[in-house]
Amino acid sequence: MSITDRPQPDPIADIKLPNGYMLWAIQAMEEAIGSDGVTEVLRHAGLERLIGSPPPNDMELGDLTFRDFTNFGVAVLELHGRAGKGLVQRMGRYAARRTIEDLPGIFNLASAALKMLPTNKQLHAALLQMANGFREIYNKAGVELHLTIEEQDDKFVYQAVECPSCAGKQASEPLCALWVGAFEEGASWVTGGKKFQVREVACRALGAPACVWEINKTPVG
Ligand SMILES: [Zn+2]
Image 1 (cartoon, protein in one colour):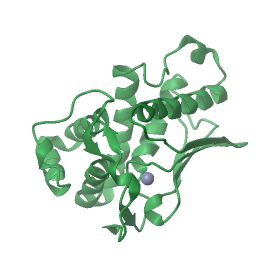
Image 2 (cartoon, protein in one colour; image 1 turned 90 degrees about the horizontal axis):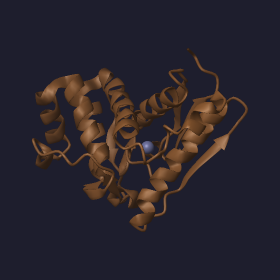
Image 3 (cartoon, helix red, strand yellow; image 1 turned 45 degrees about the vertical axis):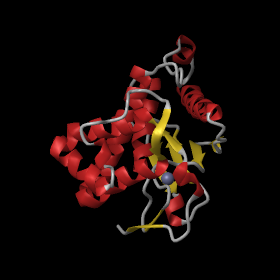
Image 4 (cartoon, helix red, strand yellow; image 1 turned 180 degrees about the vertical axis):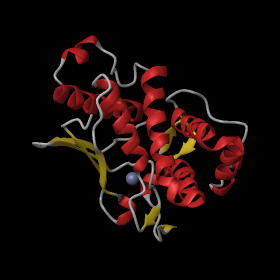
């Protein structure tokens, strides 16, 4: 896979990142490749300042940006070759789990009302609540996010212009497998353990106006 910086500045690269996302990415990679592996990734990403000094476990918008988060994920992809995509997906699963468990108020996915709904409606409600949670975080900072969720016969389509995983990059393949993992984990959690196929079908790094993921409605197991 070839990944390079865009020739023109990407306006979304300077958007601030919720602290927890970088922390959880680091912790997920510590589990998978050990702390020496993470140090190597942080160096490769130009994020030496985070070595031994990760951001706090919250959803506040601190000093880190989408550019930093993208660079971390790209470093994993570049350093780990064929295994990289699986590692990035694992970061997403880990981040979804930590958001739901550590900060349940952000997306409200643990509500009794949600548990009572049919699977299809659980997925739809979870996606809407996720998008609303992100919008609220960014509204406070005066940033409007362009997130849309469309329901089709067999799937939900989630579209994000402000994607933190490919900001400022152009690439020969989609870069945002992290969110495949996040949607898989979130969908499984909200439906009591069912598994759903998730695909990234468009990526800004390949010139699309937004990153787009499809979540199949029919569980695979
Ligand atoms: Zn993306």
